[in-house]
Length: 243
Length: 306
Ligand SMILES: Nc1ncnc2c1ncn2[C@@H]1O[C@H](COP(=O)(O)OP(=O)(O)O)[C@@H](O)[C@H]1O
Ligand SMILES: [Mg+2]
Image (cartoon, rainbow over all chains, first blue to last red; front, top):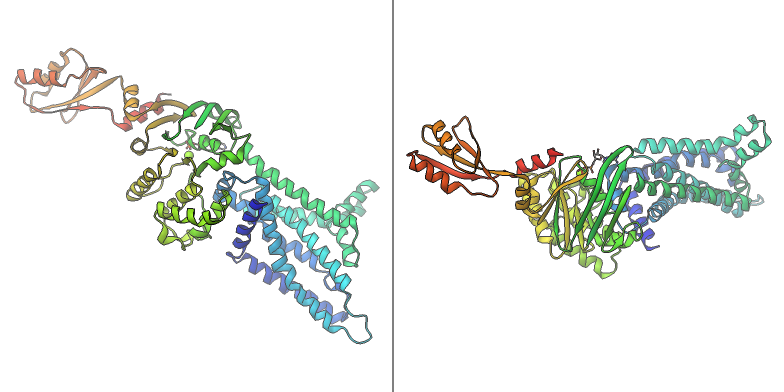
């Protein structure tokens, strides 16, 4: 635990030494704000699930930028050698870094969107149903779980290569495939494969959250996916030793 | 302190280490010498647990790195090749963070930080970002990082490579100052460097140990014969013929500057006899010196023979 915290601390600080976190935050908020304002203008409704409808795809585009550097850069510069010859395990390294990325994700992408909730709250007119804070809660839960999965995919692809660019592209493509795979389900004959493709989709499992529902299966899906890619990342770092 | 037995490392089809066995005692300063590509870095990476061996065993402080990786890693301070550092951190933050990763906590953190900052003489740069430091200073930060947890063993991979001559001397003095009762292994492809710092030199070429011992032991190991250089004022070739007749002289050459080089049997010192013989025959002897093989010659001979 202590080692994880030490690595978390260093990585978290490192995010704010470089402009990446600020740029991601700015672009994400600018775009999400743009879509949010468009929605509010047209519908003047207080349905968060719809108002935040574009957020998953925006997170899909921006989250990979938070993880590409994590391990690939240490491989490139050779500092991974400093880490792996210290008394810390590859798993501690992966989890410490992941938690840092996750915290940064919460801080620079999720937290600022609470402003939109304030805006929507102020729309509530006498007589109208107003903002449903239960739905606000489930939407945020969905977005956070969704983001957590993407970050774990990102740290895994970052562990595969010395090149940030390749790590980023592979991570993004894997994420995009997992996001869109349910759309392809209709093209598959076998009902088994069609169901499987729907079940594997990052998008399918978000829909219930947007509608205000928390289903155990959805929560478990995101948590499993996250753990799986963290374990892959761990294996990938460990395998370095056996090269 | 470190026992290496039958170590073999294959990178795919390529065998980078071929059956290396060495015993390193506590407090020894070992120089790992060999040309580029000899396998020095590979050997160090295996000892530090960064990569694993294909075959054979490494015991550090009696423990196998594979069984107790964390315990073994705590014993070792390591400066990897090319001195990797985090350029975006300040010297101070970097060293504190490395100290924490090595398991140091509480008031000891600051204590060790102050100690290493002074030991490698970078106290005045502690607030600087590593990216702004010169190569020599970075090397010191790398050394500081390797010392931060007061390890019993220091492993330094080419600690002076890429530095200018003054910086080399500084780093060399630093390393010697750090010795204490530590066991130190350092690698280099420059012989004079290791021969100045190390009690025992292990010469490695093409993944095998080709010789080991102190500088003088290496010299006797390599040179079957030693040489004497003679300069006379005139009649060079006659002098040469005369020297040839002395018992124990095996071969005589003369170079363009008329310097005569006589190869003498290993265990004999014929300098007095050569001098006497020449003077008796009225040669004007200007110079006579024992020419042992230079370190470079030994190095070349050792690493190319195999
Ligand atoms: N990761 C690797 N994969 C394949 N070959 C390697 C790898 N690392 C080193 N080698 C090869 O192993 C040999 C020894 O390398 P190294 O240990 O770095 O030598 P040195 O440090 O003495 O220069 C070299 O021929 C090098 O090309
Ligand atoms: Mg090397």
